[in-house]
Image (cartoon, rainbow, N blue to C red; front, side, top):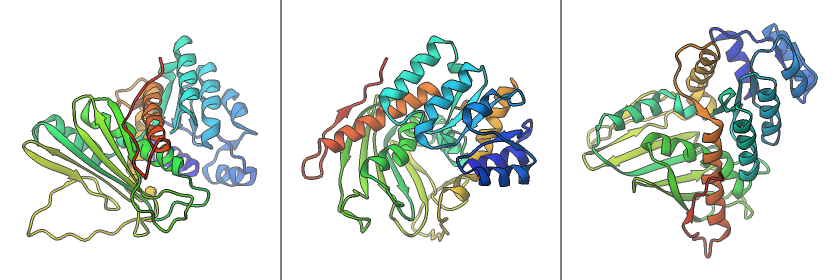
Length: 326
């Protein structure tokens, strides 16, 4: 992902000049820097401290995010950090408290790219226009080709479902208040991994959302979302390059190709996210992106989901309230 971001900043984002990059694999960093006309730094803190660095993108391992975000904020440099803000709810809360105490939260943007994905934006606009009346139900899917080595049941929540933890309340304009976890029959991913998982979310407006997470779907990367209202239904497609809403009828048959991962599906969303962030750094009008506190709220939703999973009996978890630390 860091490589993709670097190439976008260097080639497709106006107002940005890629000056430096760093990676644990120094050879890889040097190769990419040569390709893009940039220089390398020894590590993240060194890069942040460089005089020719005005703003920072963090796309490193999850466990490094919080320290790098705080370092960039302390240096007074805007930072776009890929999700999650931190690997745990407690650490995310500590980061947000520190940022707010220093008046630095405005410097931090979280990489929830669905907020600028054309299909998700169109879906949200349709809901705001009243196209389906009052929303009643939301159905979401989050599927991939394989879970990958080292995948854990908890990781499916914090690494994949976290996008719905942010996008569902963003779409509805209402916070998630309770989460319930359910375990369907396991796929062939292995006895130690619960894949798929079914998550139920209740938002403050009373809407009930279901999200099925299946990372071992095999057929391709597939992200879908349907909102059912009291006057109709609207859905975004999971097809490879979906950029608009779809409707279904008895005489409509559609076949779509699916990508192997998230890159083709959300390539434009990532470009728009980086462009909006750079525009914001320059003080130009830009779409609102997710904040550090949005990252904390999403972490709280995931924490409730993990709590429901851990309390499950015979695959059925209880409803767990979402508690956002002060």
